[in-house]
Image (cartoon, rainbow, N blue to C red):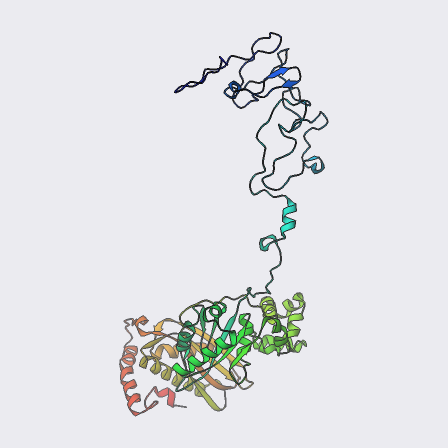
Length: 484
């Protein structure tokens, strides 16, 4: 009691060095962190007193050697991790899982540690060792089941998100003229911000969030969209609803009298399977013909083809086409502003070869397209030429202009270049169509040139437009357009 005295404002004095029974020399003071237990007799230990909590002393035997736990190695390190282990219970070798102690759940103390009541140990009660936070044994993984990141298959089908719902809208006709895609995008924007324009006359949107917002079913939402498009802009639309882009687009081309077709996820196989393979959304005519020659006539047969066989027939497009045949589609809807298009076309009374008559018709269409763009204060960013041949094939190719332009000269050069690239030779044409991606004319910049002939044609264009507006379209134009 006299060795440890509690005082105020200062630390208690150091206790005297403990002496072993038998009058041996005082034991040296070990560094902090060693065992605080001092032996009271051979083979016994006592709980530390108040003084021993300040300085921890390592016990020593009467011969001066430190006391070791049973099974300890001569170097002073115990062969086992806990007290109570004998010489035969050495630390297991790496990979010997049978000899290792089993782990328990997170937060449980290990067994066989200090203070567990084992005999022959040199340490008393100590802090229980716990497993690190987040370390779980394999049994917990099996109990909770594999998650999405563990390689488990997703519940959704190929290319179909869980709960995704797509709307594909087609403009069948517009009261009072062509076009209407910007107006359709304005109507879609009132229902969902995730809408993408598909020029020249279609759009696709995701509406799985709009259903909860408006509290309507898919078919009711589509009918409201059709009603607003018809009442505000005079658009007659057809709406297809499906769990993927492909299913919705196919459904929009097969709507009933009310203009709405809803294909549920469980009905996708029955809906797509019997359809001809040429009606698969995104397949080219040549690919459909090649599949037909090999006996693959329906979409269901394409979906059932082995992947290796489809790869030999379709090449790199085999995988996405087979996914679409099964109702999947990996494409995402990219919201964006609608690109307005302006188009003109001419039908021949009889099949025509690519010659002076076809070139004169193409020049007349280019002049008409330029006049339409200038009247709308727009310029063409790119031009697409669509040619229908006598065997009902359609050939199309697009060329981007060096700079947006509404001038007839620039449009004519692009159209002639595309026709030369077709290499039609003896192919007979029934129709020629031109489609321009229009932008605002503020993006069209006039470059000064030293070509006096071109400068003269550019200066006369406003005069030609004024005469045609007064006396009717086609009153005046390039002389080559009237030669044939």
